[in-house]
Length: 344
Image 1 (tube, helix red, strand yellow):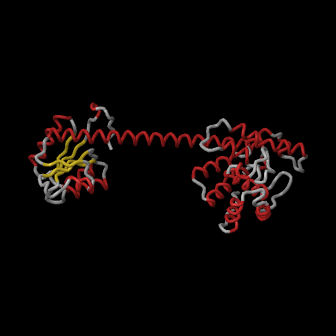
Image 2 (image 1 turned 180 degrees about the vertical axis):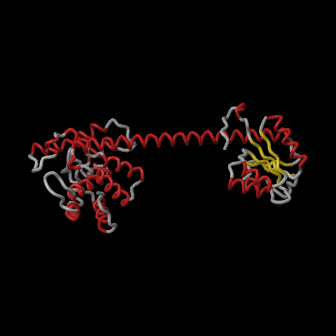
């Protein structure tokens, strides 16, 4: 499609194809339209030639007679609408055999009876070109919007990965933990049937859910023995710290809140706010289960990995009290029935 703006002076150069077995009429229209508008006009005396011309170059508008010796103009119209981006005006002197409605149903943009009044034809040409210009402008705006969104998503992914890397540098013993939690949470969300935009948000939040650990002393994060009450209280701060880091970033999802809530429990025994049931975001409940499963199944500074069976047993015992029932059920299915394995 040619890139026209709506202004009259910018309708040029339009490319017009005229198809009519009446050579005198066709050449007259080519001459008149070219001289009056400056449009680039091309003439064919058969549908076969017209189809060849359409293969060789793009035309904005095809003006075709209906009565043609090889293929009808209506059939040409149908072919154009299936294969090309041209608009079509059909003309005929046998209007008793055809109706305006039939021509429009076959894909024509306009219908003119012979004898053709060239001035009227030019008016209709310009109307269709303006409509094409408006359509193009809308499509271009949509394409620009999509391109901007793609660029923003790319930048956002890079930012999220950088934040994840910062957290893992600070806490090397859990390197890969966030990535595995994000993958498991995403898989659970898909199994539950959440919307694609929710799934993207869960994957993003899962990837940086422990970003707040950069505020925790490194010696506590890597301590090879059980934490004291005071040390654990410092660890618990990481949810709030993560929220504070992320809350002013304009994510398209409630990422900061998911990070804040990923240690909340359904019965209110979690932290930092002691939320219960529906006060916890559905996305946060998914990340909470994924976080517990990954943590139990993997190595920690103070113990070796306990394995996936122990992890699944834990969430099964806490189903409905600590963890969302539907989330636990979905997690069990993907491991036991679907053969899911945590990424290495």
